[in-house]
Image (cartoon, rainbow, N blue to C red; front, side, top):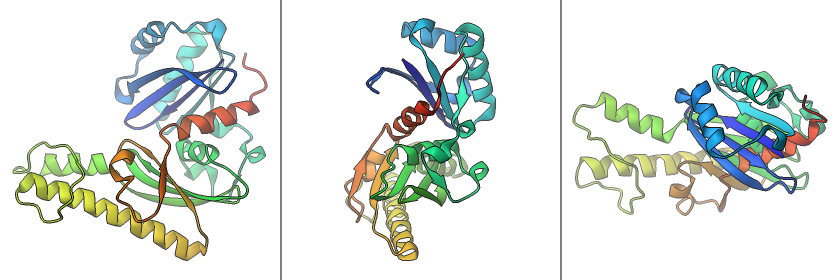
Length: 251
C-alpha cells in the first residue's frame, strides 16, 4: 500500500492507494486544524495500520503542516514520510523553471497528466486559481490568479452591505439585487479571466492544448468555458502515485 497526500493552504487530502493504483481510503482535513490528535483520530477512524503502508509521499505548500505530518508518521507509524520536491523528478518530467519557485502541488498536477505526445493546461481552483503549462513532458511554468473562494470571502468581509452568500452559476449577466449581482460578477468575471488566460497561453506558445480542470469550483465552470475541458478531481493524487514509483524503499 502507498500513502499519498496533498497539503494545501485550505484543505489537506490523504489517500491510501493499493497495488493497482486505486484509491481505497480517503481523509480530508482542514489544514489549519491539523494536529497530532486530529491525525491520530482520523487515521484510526479509517482503520489504517502501519503494516499496510510501504511508502508515504506528500506534496505541500504549508511547510509547518508537512513537518507535523512527517513527525506523526515517523513517531506513530515508524515510516519515513517524503516530500515530492525531494525526489529525483527529472526521471519523470523536465521542469524548465526554478523548481523551488513552483508549488509541489502544481508539479504533482503536471505529473498526473504527463504524456509526451500531448500538451496540457492544468487549471486548479484552489486557494489560488492556477494555470500550469505542460508541453511534450516539459513543465513550462504557469499563471497564478486570485482564488475564487478567497476573493469572494474577502469581498464579503470587507463590504458591509454584501451578505454571506455561496457562488452559483447564473445565466443572466445583469443582477437584479446584491446577491445576484455579486454571483454574476464572480461567475462571469472568472469565466472571462479563464478564457482569456487560456487564449493568451495558446497565442504565446503557438500550441494547442488539452485543458484539465480540478479543484473545488471545477464543477461550476466546466460547461461555461469556450474551450473544451475535462474535469479530474484526483489529478494531484494521481501525480503523487506516479512519483511514488521513484521511492525504492521506505524505512
